[in-house]
Image (tube, rainbow, N blue to C red):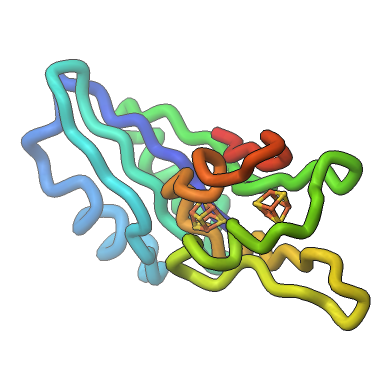
Length: 128
Ligand code: SF4
Ligand code: SF4
């Protein structure tokens, strides 16, 4: 599962990710990260069995944690199967099925939003 973690500015200089990994023994894959004047935002993927431990460990640092169940969502009714999303997606989330429709493997999504900007009919949304 993917988690969005918002770290408050007051603790941003601490090695929070390292502490969480050491304390939980969970494997975190950092998929996206940014830091600005308000604090930090990190998206990580975690094995399902580790989710609750990892959420709890981040919350001890005062972080807000949101579980992301559907990182990218396609509106089947709007999609015209143009294939633009297949071309731009860096992690091969999209492919054509045998009927020429678009198949979505959302667990591969890193929420870069490239496909959202490329889709000519606004059929795609990245959720946070
Ligand atoms: S948001 Fe990025 S990674 Fe996710 S499906 Fe779109 S292009 Fe692929
Ligand atoms: S870019 Fe949009 S319309 Fe084109 S295949 Fe992807 S979801 Fe469908």
